[in-house]
Length: 123
Image 1 (cartoon, rainbow, N blue to C red):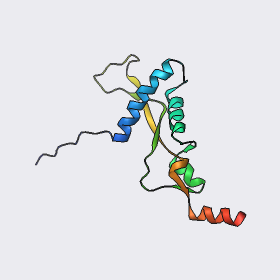
Image 2 (cartoon, rainbow, N blue to C red; image 1 turned 180 degrees about the vertical axis):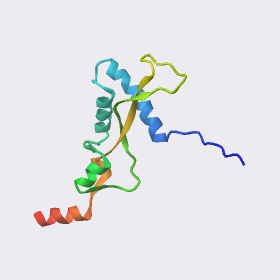
Image 3 (cartoon, helix red, strand yellow; image 1 turned 90 degrees about the horizontal axis):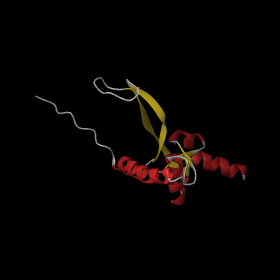
Image 4 (cartoon, rainbow, N blue to C red; image 1 turned 90 degrees about the vertical axis):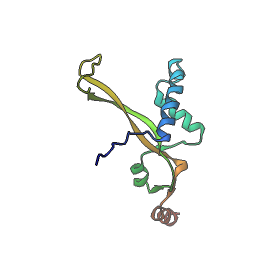
């Protein structure tokens, strides 16, 4: 019996992120922002997402991500990868790859019970 490999499909959130990045790239080119990430942060701020942190950074501060919340994305620093055999790149056998950083905002988290109790006892 043959098993078919499923083709990787990007999530809707990832597709929207990439489309938004392409749109904001124009504003970077025109000089409104220094980078696509800066433009993305400004876009998120307009929607009320003032403070962006990773899942574990929020946990460390006593917050948990609300059930059902979807991550907000920023581009990571370029990562050098070796190109696949048979493909040519300008630099030879290496190319830059931009990963994605998953973040959550102040609108997507809530204080954990332990953190709420500590806050109440301090007051």
